[in-house]
Length: 158
Image 1 (cartoon, rainbow, N blue to C red):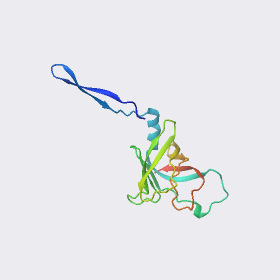
Image 2: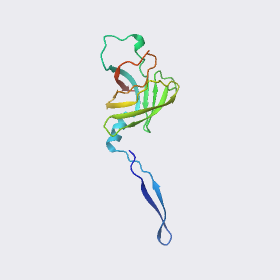
Image 3: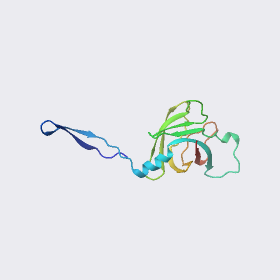
Image 4: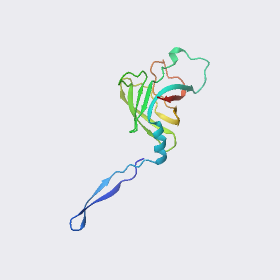
């Protein structure tokens, strides 16, 4: 959360303290609750499951995407997605922020080797130990004919 601008007077002692100039400095303060939540999110994850919004009796092989092999959230607000990890390859990278509302997350996709058009980065997250659940977030369709009706993606810390 960005706080208002504050003025900082620079003082120099040359016989007496004098104000040379005032500089405007932008200070960034991270809400303590927000920092704790985001800290649990930082790390390397692999997809371990997903939940459909509406259960169906059966899905065909062409309706299911391969699991995301590597999802990385960095402490500086960056993330990367890779379906099939190989050395330094990433399908794409982006940025993320966590919201004031506990568990809110906003991901913005950047450029990459594979950038799916059906990406949706607005949703919520919950970290419970080594399990991450993302709700209403979709990293994109890799090989399926269309986006399945998925409401939650589950990841395990790797």
